[in-house]
Length: 357
Image 1 (tube, rainbow, N blue to C red):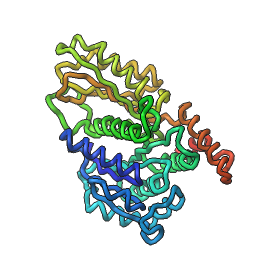
Image 2: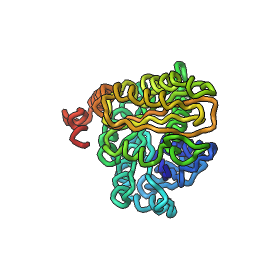
Image 3: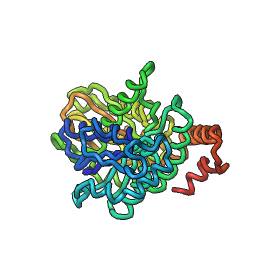
C-alpha cells in the first residue's frame, strides 16, 4: 500500500522516521514520502526525514507547551504550508495518507486531527491517523488532551489506528527504553501492514493487496493492530497449528489496543515463505478470528516473505465500543476534572464518541 506519512509533534515525528527507516531497510518501498511537522524547532533538528516548522509567529519555535487548543489553531493556520512542504509527493500514485501523532501532547494531539480534516477536504484518497495514547503513568494533562484528541481524530480521519503506550512496553523498562520498544513495535506492525501487496518474494496463493486494507478500514471509527511470529516447518502441512497459534497470540496478547476484541471488520495477513503457508491453517485461523470478533467481515490473505518463520498480522476495525476505550475515556475525564477544567458531563462518554462516528 503506497502511502505518504506526516508526523505531527515530537512523538509523531519520531514514529514517522522509524516507519520510514523500517520500510527502507526492508526494501518494501511502500512509504513514498515522509514529513515531520512541529512547532518546536528543537524536536525537528535530529530527525533524518524532511521537516516543517510551523507557528513561528505564535510560539517562536518553542512549541505549544502541551496546549492542544493552541496546537490545533497553529495547524489550522499553517495547513497549506504543511501541504506545500510535501513537495508534490501526494500524487496519484499514493493510495493513502497516514498522519502520525502522540495524542497526549500539544502540537500532535491538537494538530493531527486538524491536518486530517484539511487533507480529507482536498484529497479523495483515505486519510488515516495513527494515534498513540499516553501511558497510565503519564500526567493528567496528557490524559485529558488525548481524550479530546481521540474523539476529534475519530471524527476527522477515515480510520483512527490507536496504539496504547502501555501495550508493548516491557516490564521494568525505563521511560526511554519503553518509548523505543513501542516505536519499534509500531514500525514492525504498521510497516508490514503498509507493505502488504507491495513487496512480494515468491508467489502467494492469495496475496493481500491494498484494497483489502482499505475495505477493512472503510467503516471508520477506531482500529487496532497485532502481530506474532513463530518458527515454521519446511512442509506446509506441518504448519496448520503454527498458523492458528500465531493468530491467537496476535489477537489475544499483542494488539495495540489490548482487550479490544469485538470488531466490525478484520483483516488477517499470514506472512512468510509461500511454500510453508498451509491453506488449511489460514482458513482455520480466519474462522477463529470471525468467532472471536463477532464479525462476518474477516478478510484474509498472504504476504510472501523470505523467512524461516510464519507471522500473523491482525487488524481490527470498529473497536471503539470496547472496554479498553471506556476505561481510557474515564481516565481522561477524571484527569480533566482534576485540572479544574469545565467539562461537559457527557464529553468523554462512548455515547458521545458514537455520535462522532
